[in-house]
Amino acid sequence: MNDYQQFIENVKRKTGIDLSQYKEAQMKRRLTSLYEKRGLKSFQQFFQEMEKDEKLFHEFLDRMTINVSEFYRNAKRWEVLEKKILPKLLEQNRHLKIWSAACSTGEEPYTLAMVVSKLVPLARVSILATDIDENAIARAKIGMYTERSLQELPEEMKRKFFTKEGMYYKIDEKIKRAVTFKKHNLLADPFDRQFDLIVCRNVLIYFTEEAKERLYYKFNQALRPGGILFVGSTEQIFNPGLYGFEMEDTFFYRKIN
Image (cartoon, rainbow, N blue to C red; front, side, top):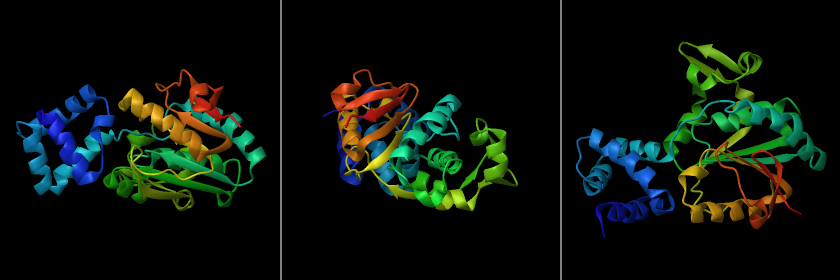
């Protein structure tokens, strides 16, 4: 067993995270740059240091889960969600159940809450936001963001939902209360059911083809009939019918009844 394979085994035993489900070349490159920055020479040494140093362990999780997130990322897609997808879902269901999967530091689920609040009172919406990285979830719950995170957000939404505090922007409490954060491993943990909308963007590109296919099936099972899966701008599903979906719009897939 080589150095990296041994590392995969050790990480799986320690955390339940299965790195073999992630694209190997990308993951190795990302993690090698992290341990070399620390002056370490191998994955074995890296794991030994992580066992002793909690800060390094959280850095590993951060690097592994690529916590790059912005509010309203790819604005055109959010407009399609607001103008076309959500109105149709609300015709079918007065109360919406939404899941932001692999939510990172909270920009995506909070964007969802802001967009939905334009259409219905937030009391009619349940938003679950999950991530494998507890550190990212802790930061999401604080709800404080830099200017950079808000650069794609329309100005009127920025004014309405944020208060500037020093160098940071604090999100409105009503938006914060609309989102429930939980730790969840997409590749290992069971999924809840009967969602109207699942948003999983800019995450699937890091998984192997086999892992991706399993997730498409699991997302399908987690949606109610007619529910929508919203994926990232580099994650088009080329044979949606194989997984029980049909294309509703670019990057939006409807569960076939």
